[in-house]
Length: 165
Image 1 (cartoon, rainbow, N blue to C red):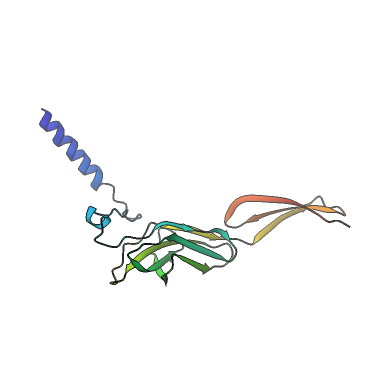
Image 2: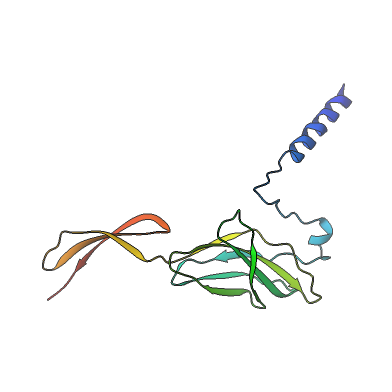
């Protein structure tokens, strides 16, 4: 009876593993034991993308000692195809972007021998949007209340502007 319980548990596990295929999502990158121990080059780690930078998005990551350069890929949505848009030997790269841009990035490491790693997980970066003024109220000789919002930020901001004579 115990033997059948183990077989049943193994079958359920296999069904669960193989039934988690979603055509809209990329499979996660899981390195084999030989890859993580030194055989193949890995994608960069600790990738970050700037949020709210003026007219640009800066990417940065931890340098890989086996990499001689990096390929950077971009998409306008995490579900879109990522297209190579830059290459660099640095562990940082700044893109010029229109105000209010939201862009998704992935990065691959390239070894000295030319081997390209799988793409990293994606990160999202945003550039500072131009404010959209929605209201000006409480206007006096010395102050006004200005309410504004940004197209890529859901929070509405308000400020009081005071002038001195």
